[in-house]
Length: 196
Image 1 (spheres, rainbow, N blue to C red):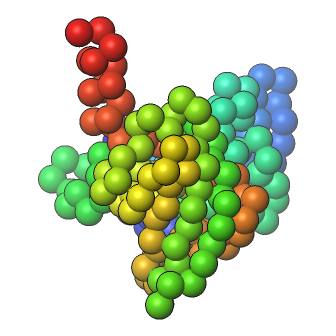
Image 2: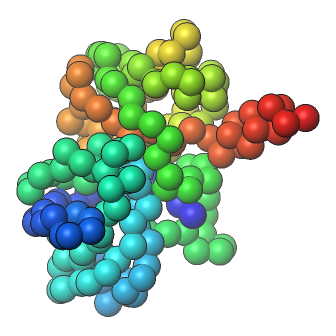
């Protein structure tokens, strides 16, 4: 589990297709002596397993399913990636409970300055849009954010200067595709209503 609070922005240093999957090597400033092989790290919203590591990099393997339902299929060398290590029991929950399972890919419609912040409008894929509520939580590229408003399948979030500066969200432009994870509570509440 994660909290949606990015703790490093890594960089893809290598991409290689294997006979089964795709392998990414990620440069990071994480203290990798504390990261075990088999550890889970959130990569732009995707929970991936560390399979190898060096002094300042680690490798993950990504299945065809993950490549198909997330933005990872378009990753190339040099891409910057939001990273978060898994939460530990007792850690401060600064964002919200995040599983690292991408629910869909959104399309950025606009990015506008608003005071010192930036307002971003995103179109969510249907039927995922049903789970997004004003003042609810959503994860965009692994970052926990509060939904400001919703109109049909379009929602808006506000990025404060800190978030804009220390995550990859400061690189967003209209037309960009982003990984979305809806709030876990919304997911289970909707499922309960369908089966009740």
